[in-house]
Image: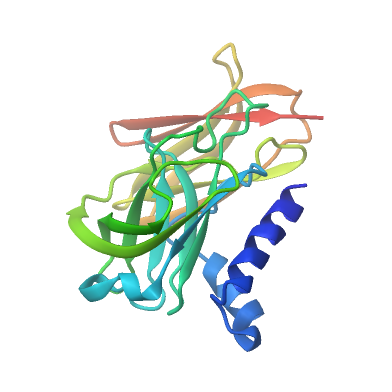
Length: 242
């Protein structure tokens, strides 16, 4: 069902003429190959956000820059690479069948960030004008941006992303962003606060990192993964199913 929903969304974007037929498959692959941001959890329900390429003005990204959408609590709900065309993002909604918040709730506002690859800068974006829709999430709706502006350069801080896929049956990956080289501890805990798996405990260079986790030996249930770097600690929740 999740794949079908995404294909329908992508087909709609192509039907609107956002990509040329000759470059369609290649552009799709490039669009999803993010480096700074992790892939968002596909929850099977989304709101389509289209940023017209003419909407950028002086803030137009360079090819290879990345755009991400976040919910009001700072959870990333979509990410794409700018490939020099109109940009379409699937803003994923929250999965009501899991206890963790993986996406946008109904009518929740989303915000956008731009990562400038050549400068390694993170910039907040503000939509000045919508041709259609607005900046709130509604399942199966479409918002079209006709004017967007870069606002301020943001400090890049330690960031822990939701594991993908979630829920987890066999294997998942956990992504995090480290603003500077540092020692990192990443552990998985059960509901009793007991460590059940050590995922990483070493020094990492600054940048984005991915840690794979095998869940075959875990019982079904709710787990928490903690990321510790220096005096900072971030926690997210995952669901293991059998």
